Length: 451
Ligand code: HEM
Image (cartoon, rainbow, N blue to C red; front, side):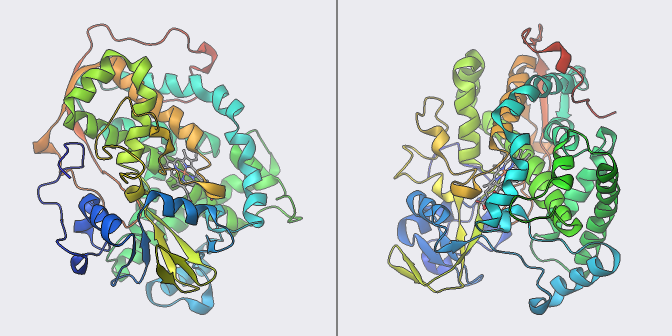
């Protein structure tokens, strides 16, 4: 891999042979692409000795797994008291005593209950609803720039990429704009709690934070039961799940809050926004081409960012039967890691896969949002958030640079998610900042920047 568009770090781990390969290492995951390349070519179903997981890395194979409900399950619910030990048991006991043991989330269910539960979310993510809020998303994207445009510098993650999607999901989930930093602290803790090398103290802290969040959201659930409104959360709280004859329990709602909505729906978009700016910094010719004609190239750029730097690098499935992929026998019950990040750079599907190509015809066919029945529910919203996030950047910023001295440029140690904590940039604002004049003015206050 020689291209500039790979996420360069000083010394990416480049295993010389399969004997050296593992993905369960923060150093490897900092820049996993050389490792992906080796396994994709030499062991497309790689049985990782450290984790015991079967890592699937080719585009076609991942599609096959994600589309095959007969043989592969999403049932990765881990709060079964019979099987819990160590830190997981400790967290379970704390939830039981002080909060709510999180139930099975949407993403962890199989058919038919998955489809039934997913229908609760449908209304909020219908194209019509996304269109209705689109002007609001755009206004927010431009308004956020007003806060720091005169400074000539910002932490793009903290001041822009975090608030944009978080404010939008807060509104949908009935949380107050003013609480976004508290909610961000809870989602950060949640992510840390599913990261590498946790001590007992880390687990206690992350669980306490999640329990705090549960009490905050529980008050909102109860209010919405008394007084339903038109938010997504009100639908989740009050509508019966078709076929279940009941609404979601508090435990199930709490699982939705953290995993599927606040982490799934804001951390992901935040990280794609940060990755996009990092890629533009490293590929000045792409910046030039994109800023010269955003109408033509921006939609493809948005896809290329998620393809190259997918915020969700991989997720797991469980083999429901003995199966075989690429000649490798996978026993029933084994955990399979479908590595979207590796599939998205598979040269069998994408020409020059490590390069950002603003002319790429099949850019949107990447697997960064997965595929099949669990295809990302928020993808239509994420695409509009990313579009407006980058559009406002292009309309406000003449030139910029990532400041090496101020950035660690390290991702958080996490097996499945790719998260950049900060991105300090310096910039020169456009002399005449542009703001589209066809935005719906009534949507100007739909989402408010944080105080
Ligand atoms: C760039 C942004 C995003 C990325 C890369 C992303 C990625 C993904 C991926 C890979 C899955 C598949 C899970 C699987 O196959 O098991 C998924 C599912 C999901 N995503 Fe996203 N997501 C993004 C934004 C969002 C947003 C904005 C929301 C909501 C506001 C959201 C909500 C969900 C939910 C609820 C699921 C579970 C769907 C199901 O299991 O039926 N995501 N996402």
